[in-house]
Length: 124
Image 1 (cartoon, rainbow, N blue to C red):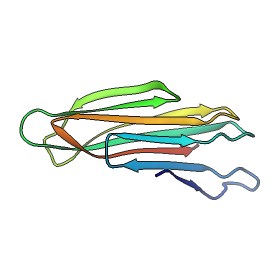
Image 2: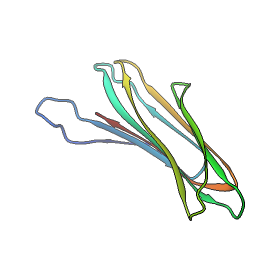
Image 3: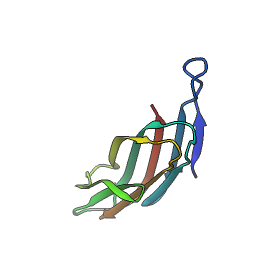
């Protein structure tokens, strides 16, 4: 499910940068980044919903992103007639020391089928 990776430190004595990610085949993904008791962190969050058109006729897909239970972003678009189409969002979030970050990405489709829903969080 979720994977945590730390990259090498940029400078001697600085904290390693965190990278968290999850990807699912479906319409709902959740990623919980645990709290760091000692420091504030600044993250870039990227969510991507990939779908395929199910057949002829109209189709659409939507993505809704919740941060700590509150809606951060939502959009519905027409699904392209090609093989695959995506809907994605990127935003920044500051997380105070001692607080976790809870992310939910919720996709939905009409006339399309979900292929992949992913959340990536990169410390800046």
